Amino acid sequence: MNTASQNIAHHLGVLRERMLHPTDYEKAIHYFLEEFAGDVKFITESDPDEAPHLLAVIQHAVSQAAGQTIKLDAARVLHLAEHRFYHGNAIASDRVVLFFYFQQNDCGIMALVPGIKGGTDVVRFSIPSGLTDPRKN
Image (cartoon, rainbow, N blue to C red):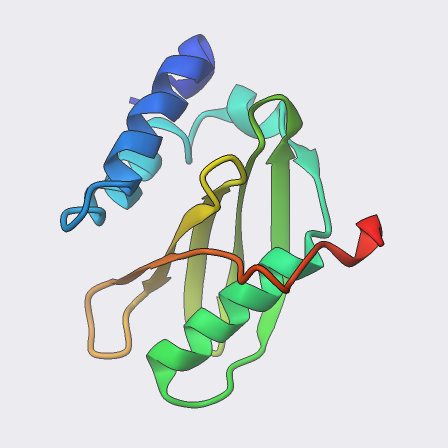
């Protein structure tokens, strides 16, 4: 557990595969928590990134899950540029938001803990084609 940094390419591959599963993509968040979230080396090898386009999509997903506009607070986005992989967390009202996103696949997972109806809400998302990173304009 928490060994992603020992073979990052392998673990990202497993995470990607679980995330892209047509129906059982919730297993991806469990794998992320088991292998990545507590791996200090994985965290320290990731670079801080503002990623405003990504945070906008995550805020939208959280708001849709809640049925009302929710602002993200204390957002932390980290980027493994070599693997085109983002991950991070934020606070949304009284809930924790965990997320990760693969640029190559334009696909990510967001978990809202606790969920709107208890438990954990898990949402798969992509960045709309018209929404680009404003830093690249």
